[in-house]
Amino acid sequence: MAGAVCPACGVAVVPGYVRCPKCHRPLPRFGRATASPVGGTAIKPKGGSPVLAIAIAVVVGGAFIAFFALRGGTSGHAAPIAPTTDTPAPTPPPATQVAPVSSLPPVASTPNPGAIAAQLDRTLQRMRLFSTVAVTGARVELQSASCRDPQLVKQVDAVLPSFKAAGLTRVRCVEQSGAVVFDREL
Image (cartoon, rainbow, N blue to C red; front, side):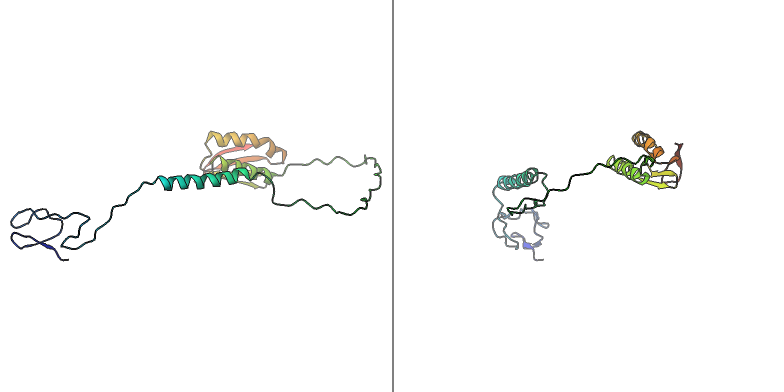
């Protein structure tokens, strides 16, 4: 890299020195916008303010928000087109009333334990109590680092009647280390 030369003693000086390292005389300084004898480039300072860029960003952001807010909850499916014939639509035959069969016992629907466990899993995920909820036989097993968290216990207590109605007998919460925090009988 070529350096400047001290005008007093002729020693080569690295650019950036204010005084000559040999004779200690002040070296000439060159402005940024002028060409220096040691090389380099002149940089034109940037001008202007970022107001225009900020205004454009606000307008574009507002357009996105307005688009999503005003598009509504309509589905993308078109309504079926009614036929344009002049003939009247056929009328269905009159319904005959059927007496209920009394010999069949009423069917009691039991809740699906897998669906209850999946709903509990989603609820815990939304609450950021990351857990794994699984139904194994007649037992519900939670694996979580949050087994001792009062919010997790509250959510588990809220679904215990549903688990019992589904025919499950135990709820157990196991920490990731393998330690059983609670094991409840339903």
